[in-house]
Amino acid sequence: MPIEASSLPSRRLALKTFASLTAAGGLGGLLLAGCSRDEGKTASAGGAPAVVKKVGEKVAFKYPNNPSFDLIYLADELGYFEGTNTRPEYVGKIAAPQIIPLVGTGEIDFGSRMVPLVISAIASGADLKVVAAGGKTLQEAPHMKYFVRKDSGIREPKDLEGKTIGFNSFGACAEFVTKKYLRQHGVDVNKINFVVIPDEQAEQTLVTRNTDLAIIHAPFSGRADNAEQLVRLWSDFDLDGGLGGMAPYSAHGQFIRQHPEAVRDVVVALAKAGNWVNANTEEARKLVAKRINMDLKNVDRYAYVDDLVVTEPPIQYYIDILQSEGKLASGKVAVKDVYTNEFNPFANKIATKA
Image 1: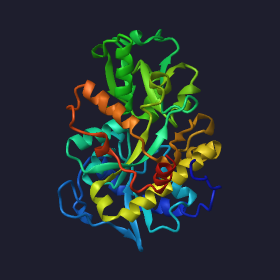
Image 2 (image 1 turned 135 degrees about the horizontal axis):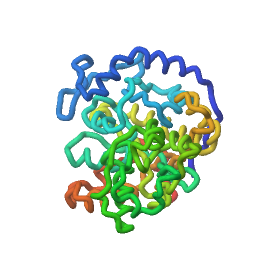
Image 3 (image 1 turned 60 degrees about the vertical axis):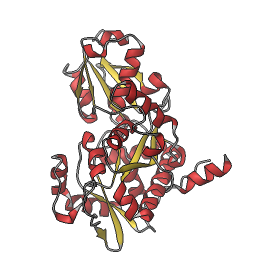
């Protein structure tokens, strides 16, 4: 059984969040450019030990401040870091394709991106590991949705040959789940043009005919659902039953080794926030709508793995896909190389019951 979701506590950390974001505003540009920083002596993979900044006596972990439905922001808003020695330090907006590479080098300490990106980073020698499961795909709460214009004539997978598909990054769920599904339906994916479009821009890019199909993640997929010119073809639940929908949280290896208690604090806060969202879907949507300044009716919901305990089938699913796509040599990365439940106390409860 999942840990009990608490009622909405005090939100007095919100001001701290805004203050931290203001102070870090200049840093975001550097991160978006993918540059390393001299100040703070942040370690890259194989480099010198990192000097971890602290807020008072608290360990500060570096995290993106992106417009998204994210448990770190919700855990902070809900007060789940109170009473711990750990706090998020928001370092500005980071483009989605850069998050895992920056976790892998220690430029940021935690990040949430899909499993295949983590596997590929580990195969390349990056120092990171999944420490908590994240979102899960349900039929009523998919991880991503597929949209076309109503007048496009696109209704079947084969119709996409010769067309342009927009998604938020290469190497992640949108690319590999989609290609697997299309190949299963006899589509030549080499005849499709894939382009990177941020989720928040994908609906408008489709409406203006710059793409023919848009794959959009929550919360922005709700806006496309409500767009008069568009129709939803599928969700990732339709494509693979949700097996590819786990969006986990990864941490830099050196941070894990130096600050195991801080990692545990983060994982526990994430688990509490995920369970709270599952039990309070509408209240969660309201908080996210306020955060990203979007009309509530357009904010899609998320669902999360109970207690954020990592399971192996979603990881093996992507290892198999990466191997079949020729992106990963057989035996290069094993499931156990990718994740740990060591810092999730609720994983022990599940193991004991099993």
